[in-house]
Image (cartoon, rainbow, N blue to C red; front, side):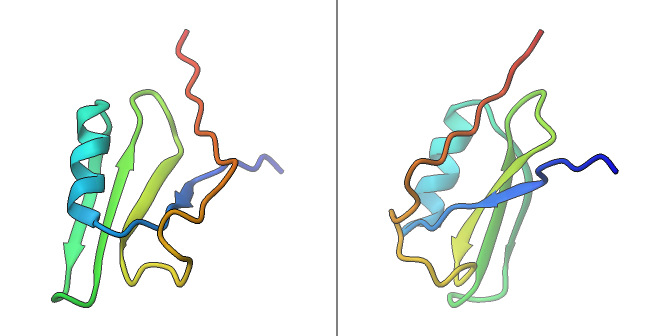
Amino acid sequence: MEMKLEAVVVPVSDAGRAKEFYAGLGRRLDAGVATGQDFRVVRVTPPGSPAAVIFGTSVTSQTPGSAQGLHLIVLIG
């Protein structure tokens, strides 16, 4: 069975700033959903990658900035 990484959740303190940051890196916006001020989820994908980054408000209980040693590397060729 072939397995692939689909998404990585990154805890952030400001989903709007994170969205702008990833958009500035050329990431494709796959989804952006908010059901009020208490919940927001954003999903972005690097060009040529099957793996996405997910962040937002109330998406994870992890402390913003606590993701360490996480590398998302996209090989294009």
